[in-house]
Image (cartoon, rainbow, N blue to C red; front, side):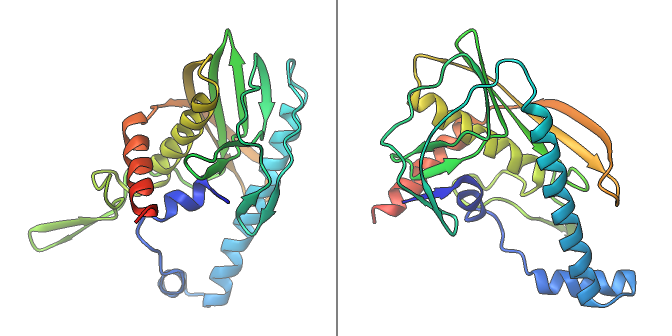
Length: 227
């Protein structure tokens, strides 16, 4: 049984008390907790809708390849996948599963492009705001920040680092199954939208391949899973 990359990374991030956060936000905005939660849900749905629209646009690209990988999703746990997926070839793949039974993980990159036998991956994000570091709180002479836990306690817990690790895990898994291909580049496209789901801007940038951090996380996960 495989778990999603997002779920995997969440186990190494500080747990968020959403109820507490909603109460704090309600005081700041002078609205009810229910209204805060309704705003969050509206933003979540808007992000999904825009993401679907962007995927429809991508379907019109030249070189898009079809794929047929059967599996079942049981509440975020995935079953029925073949032992390996070694069929990646030159072309563009949209939301194609990348998975590893060895690592126990599965992910769904928005766009995989294999060009000149080199793997490139792009993911589209609809964050209301992109945070490159976690917020800090100074208490006396000490500064507290939300960080990832061991084995990568030096990484800020923020959506930029989350994205870098997510894409890096995708790349690691894809290359692990297709070693005849080369590791290419990772891209994040941050899509900014308004309250009516209109796209204001699209900002594409290359993000680092955090190979060493990925190996640390996977090794630590394997050690603890076998205990």
